[in-house]
Length: 465
Figure 1: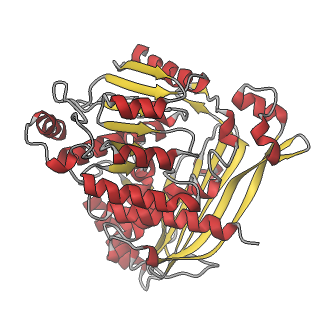
Figure 2: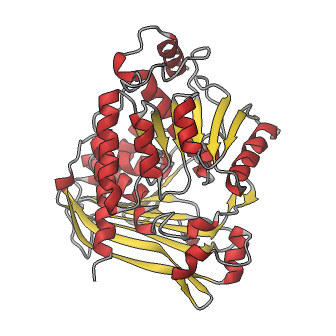
């Protein structure tokens, strides 16, 4: 509420900082406030994440959203999801979509500029260019990951951040996994020396931090089977797995291991990397795209009638000398009763903090505390219980349960388990708070740059003969 009012006053004020105005060539203001509201422009919403930003309403955001996209099934799918949110019986939204359809959608948005924040979530091939063009025009950008998929385009992203600083606009990517409750508590516990000790250095074979994410091409989103655009399976347009989902994992390594520390590219050393394919049959491809044949642009990825998608990847690297391993795996469909899963270990000098989401956990993420190097189990148990008592002030209801000698499960109330889709609203709220403040935390921008440097350098390493 307070953040929304602050943003309302900021937008309505006549003292908007000069650095947030348009480029010198612009003769009209970038944005004329309508009742002080932030106004969204959604550019080419080809990925379902674009609609998840609008699954909830925001006090400081105008309900009118201007959409610029090429005509076709992708924008129609986006609009159908928004209509579904508007018509649902439980807490319906009230978005009003103003849609421009045409191949010149980017130029049209930049020339009309009816809003001051561009949301972009779709085909990744030109996303870096879209971001840079918007930033040059003085438009704030809330971008779905990844913001860059090619090592060749990484300098373009660096330029976008530099230009954003010059123009006083914000560029921010949607890192939903920071809001997942087991990850939040893993981070909290890793900052307590009496429990975790210090983060180990690790080795390539036994990293101090390991994060693995398993995803599925066939899945349910907002209660309905997801139909993916066919370009999603073209790594030239979507990006390989090593530069896509691993963005989240690299972000979490930085965010948990070095919280609020501004990192540098020189802090990263790629040790090794690899990539491999997930193979789809024509029937699988039809199930998730609705197409009964492969588009011509996928011909180079065919082995007979099998579509071989480089959706899997692993990067072994060091960050400020600490060994980390991140890997992403894409399967076609999850086992019955399960979905996308996450595995994570942070190894400290006193215990390991492990998130598992396998069959034993009924495919729900669970956080385990596993004491490793402690002289006294009684002393460690007492320290751990005291730490949990302190954490209950911020996370009421969490309960420590000993499940075997030197191993505990942190039981977490269901009220904290809001789900992946709800995390998009949480990230958007945070972005709106940053807009109200007029700035991002000092560490966010350098760490976004380091994050994408890590993924693109990891891809270069994986492509080596």
